[in-house]
Image (cartoon, rainbow, N blue to C red; front, side):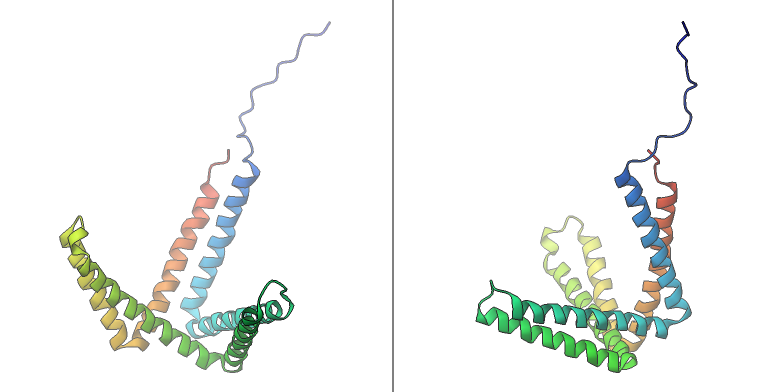
Amino acid sequence: MTAPSVSAPSTAAPAAPAPARGARLALLVGGLAAVGFGIAVLAWPTKAAVALTGLIALYAIIAGIVYVALGIFSKSLGAGGRIGHVLLGVLYVIAGVYAFSSLQQSAAFLALFLTIMVGVMWVIEGFTSLFTLGQSGSKALTVLFAILSVIAGLTLLSSPLWGAVFLWWFLAIALIVLGALNVGRAITGRKG
């Protein structure tokens, strides 16, 4: 008769469940992509803007084709819905093709448009904060936020080209920092 074997206790950490490994992998891949794109924006700001515009144009073309197909082949839509989907799809395709035909000009337009939109939103957000001052728990912080938001918005609106450059660099730095933090989170994440 043999004695039952006693194995030494394992010191290895149990393997992480599949969802946790998947989440860590997503953090790692997303973080590395963010760092890579952030570095590309800092190193080649114009080329990165053109590449991003190209991706947006490609998305517009694909979305347009999908809308046209929905309008043509959908049995559940009425005539108005079908026509609307086809027209919207055609507009998406036209916008995407136009953006591809002049990527640099489209990138410049997109940068200025987004900068002006951010400026307008910051001004509106600042005034909205002042209008809701009565419901605020911290009136001093709300007033400070409102003033800074309006000043930042007006600064972007007064010089949208400078504002676009600033926002692009800020985006690049944020992508690098946040991407690196996500890579760190993925590497040091709990194993079990």
